[in-house]
Image (cartoon, rainbow, N blue to C red; front, top):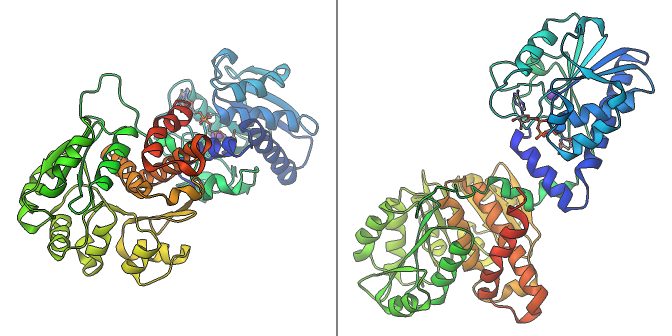
Length: 470
Ligand SMILES: NC(=O)C1=CN([C@@H]2O[C@H](COP(=O)(O)OP(=O)(O)OC[C@H]3O[C@@H](n4cnc5c(N)ncnc54)[C@H](O)[C@@H]3O)[C@@H](O)[C@H]2O)[C@@H](O)CC1
Ligand SMILES: [K+]
């Protein structure tokens, strides 16, 4: 079952993979015409009632394909100038000679009424003129066939079709009761548009409201450092570059001065000991109160006191978390600390083995995500992103990503997305794609000499390329 919003992800990812929306629309319209002729035969009197989005675009293409077989009339809900998308406009231009206003049409005069008013782009309410049209179509003495979804599904007023010709997969919430007989047609969406992450995942990136204030677009706490200083700082800069407003780093005494000197962009809190210890848990829990999401792990080391403190912090943390690096080792001895937590775990192959006792495979990753009830980004040549029910692969990135620190950057990107209050799975999808895509841009200019800081510097370019278009 495909959630409505995922159709938009598929559209964008398909285009990225070289299959245009125009060609998908062409296939969709052809598929509808084929299903109609197969089901009802030729020479029927057909009305195609079209709205203003790409669902209407499918209707226009279906009309063009049916013209050869049937007596076709296109009925417009709104004047053609109101058609919203370029794809639908182009499709309209090719059938406008059979298009008329739907005002005053008698739907009972047609053998078949094809419903191309609203598709998956309609997520909320049905407004006029669609309300009246839907009521009139439902009341008509005719056979109704919906394109993709019954218009208005999931709102207070929907078309009640005898058939729905839907594309790629059944859409969420469609049943024979609300959709009639469901006919699924393949329209050529490339497999990787849904199996792999792509720029389409950015539809879940919450862009800053123009009037938003400091901190409203994500406040992050990173608990890291002690034996190492670079890892938490890299994560912090990764978080800022993907769009977090404020990044706090709570770090042990030994790493405080170096980290505080790296960048004026980071807000650094000094802990009392030279490694993370249980004595500092209370202070960290206090800082957690003021942030939206927490990353724990980068550069912490494996001191036993640190591992104990990590388990205590995770147990007390009531914000979404990314658990990375040494924190993964720390929880492996007591996975119950994850109970009831909303989190992303970011193991590489060795950490995955410590966590699960298994070697990396898609099946093992899915089983672990189910068992732990959390999202995993299993890092490797191709990252596996899974919540146990749904899995996506990340093909972005290149062999130079093996340079130290790129995993810390990924964890920073993931926690920044969590701090913007999106689901862990969506945060993980965006972070994994962005990290690899930034690495690919770094490779273009620096090839085998790029470092994790170069990846950070390329994150805004990834956003500029892909987020701006959404
Ligand atoms: N990847 C895919 O599966 C493809 C999907 N396509 C089609 O594209 C559809 C989605 O198209 P869109 O996203 O353009 O959206 P829709 O065609 O579902 O149109 C919904 C839009 O109409 C607006 N609207 C205008 N007047 C309205 C009113 N009075 N009441 C309620 N809403 C009103 C809504 O705000 C919303 O933006 C799919 O259902 C499918 O038919 C195909 O064209 C191509 C490929
Ligand atoms: K429809």
